[in-house]
Length: 257
Image (tube, rainbow, N blue to C red; front, side, top):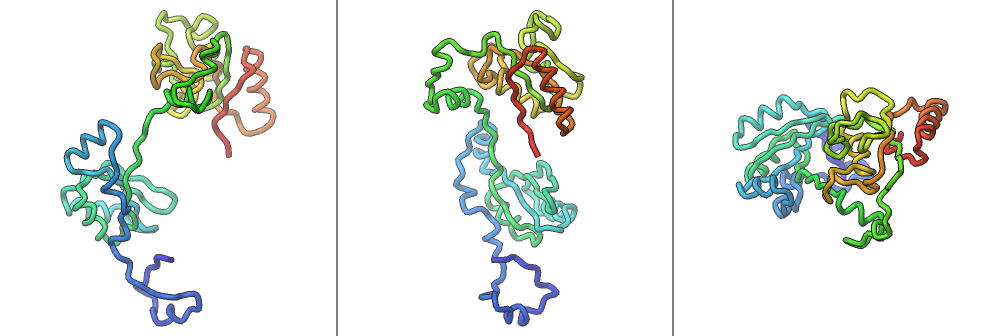
């Protein structure tokens, strides 16, 4: 099925096209995810919103629709909290909090194409550790054999790791180097840390001292870090050989084209 704009189209001519079986008016009810109201919230934040009888949703506009005009329409409705909006390819997406009744009213706005529940982000480092070792909940055969990354250096090339994150700090205040709790070498500026790089390094070897989502897989290992290289053989090879010389024969590089 195709959703088409017919304000300037001649419907009779469309019906004559051989591949057209039927033309029907686009029903506003089709704009809403069928299971939207049935979603069970997971996080405390979403549960608190659900207790108010509201849902966090993503509202997608048709390609070319005006975000300014649509936001004005939503504000005039009342009862809808706009969290933010962003451009995804050629159409806008608006994050909102609203009651189911107001979600149905949103679907009546002509520029709205689709409304669905906003996904919930869940932290899973705790479960990732048993998944990579056994894929059996709570079974850690690698750890059970005394292997947690002791005396190992792992190199990461990514966005800049936040050295002040609890998973990487040194409580004694030692500088980055052989005596630092978590970071052996940091081959670029530590300014402007990046969420992705911090997440990647944290999943590999982060450790806050607690068995929770701040602990990575090889949590006793330490970090050698550099930002992503320019994508040429010589640049990549320079990074790899530098890290190897610093003691890291293991790399994790969570990026690509």
